[in-house]
Each structure stands twice: as structure tokens, then as C-alpha cells.
Image (tube, rainbow, N blue to C red; front, side, top):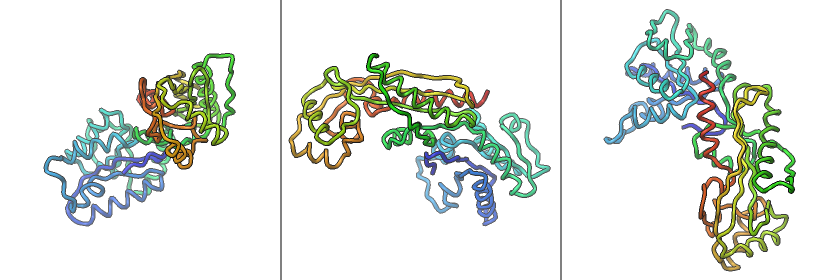
Length: 338
């Protein structure tokens, strides 16, 4: 179904009948939307497999399949040339969940007052190709989520939240002001990354920019990425058997429109971790296979089985406090409806 890599997805609904004509119509609509930059989800095709899939007896199509899919999509597109109860239910659910609703219908179709009130827009057509330009404009105006990092770990963290996003690396120079406390240093670096991407994307409309910066703090010292395997080895050995290892994660999350910042959060969150005592063999295997030079302190809790969370948020220990991004994503949707 929906991949979280910046693509625009629509849940598409229409009145179905028996026969091949509906399949052809879905294929035609899918092709037109693809040209406009939209991929789609269709229950009859993707879940029911045109009647060939067996839906479990304890599951129902609308609440168990359609509703979750609607929430994950960027919009609902309802072909309303012919009315249907299911179309109204799906559109109402999308409206309640603040998923934009777009009605498409052949010219001369009768659109109910209720559906007119729910829809963000109604697009009439004689030929399906007439839908391409209107939907291109809709796609260009959609609020977007931008991750200001090429970190595979941070990418996966956002993917796990079902938030659709794209990557625009900040390439900001990370210079820590060592005269300031650790929390302030990490927050400043994260904000520098976010502002760099804000400037790179200043010609774009409503968007959420997510940036983070992490360091490991141990015995009063702050550690970034080790410069050599020997550095990583010595640091990890010194942490073994200790439960006072801290992940300081600076977060900067901005809601912006053009050059204007509408709302922002800039804080450093802290998580406390412990590390087991491990054998030299396990350590060397870890150093060889887990790319310690790409991780602050030489490790990340996600793929280091001998490191454990003791206090705080797991996401902070991973290197980005994802709960902040999730909260701001909800706020982004509210701005889109203003």
C-alpha cells in the first residue's frame, strides 16, 4: 500500500457494479492520477482483489480496511457521478479525520448538499484527462513533511509513524558552542539544520521541517561520531557495566509557509541508558558489522543488543524525539484547514 517516501497517495472510491467496466474505469482513473503525481488505493482492487480475496469472517471491509487506509492517505478522491451509501460513509470519515475530500463527477451529475459541504473541491469532467491539471495544482499545494537528514535511522523512525515525508539534507556545518551547556548546544545545532532547510525550500508552501542532532554524554563528556575504530573500541569498553550513559538529542521542528515560520519547537530531550559487560569477541564483531563510525558514541540503541534504555523516551535514545514530530504533524494538518 502506501510507501512513506514523499509520494502523494489518494484513497479512491466509486460506485461499483459487476463486470469488467469498473476495472477499466479504475485503471483509467489510476493512469490519470499518476500523471498528476498521485498514487491511489482502491479497496475493490487492492483488498478485495476484484472479488477473489477472502476477507476473514471477523473483519469488515469499511472499519478494518477502508478507514485505516483513508487515514494514511493524503486525500480521498470520490467519483460521485453515481451516488452510493458507501461513498458518503467514506467521505464523512475522511472529513472527520481531516483528510481532504475531492469529488470528481461527470458534468451534469447531481451532487448532494451534504457532499458539497464535506468536499474541499468538486471537479467536473467530460474526459478523464481534464482531471490532470486540477490535481497537479492540488498536489503542489499539499502540506509536506521534510526530514532535514540523510540518517537511515531517522528515516526509518518517520517511516514507522506512517507520516509521508521527503528528505532535504541540511548540509549545515555542525559547530558546537562549547561555552554553553550540553542541552543548549544540541538544540542550537538542530535549529541550524532546520533553518538551512527552511532557506533551501523557501519557495514552497505549507510544510513541516524536522531536524535533530544527537550526542552521547558519559562521565561529563560529550561524544559525537568516533574518528576511528580504535576510538570507538576504547569508548565502548569504558562504558561497559555502566548505567549512566546519556543520549542528548536536540530537536527542531518547524511549521513554515514560504519564508515564514508559523510554529516551532526547539528542545533537547535526554534519555538514560546502560551497557552490558561483553566479551572482546562480541565487541569486535559489533565493530566490524555495525558501522560504529556513523553513530554518536560508536553505537545506537536500535542495533546494539547490549545497550538498554533505563529512563526517558526510546526515540530520544535513537537520535530523534519522534513524539515531537508527530504532535507537530497534527498541527500541520490544522494549518492546512485554516
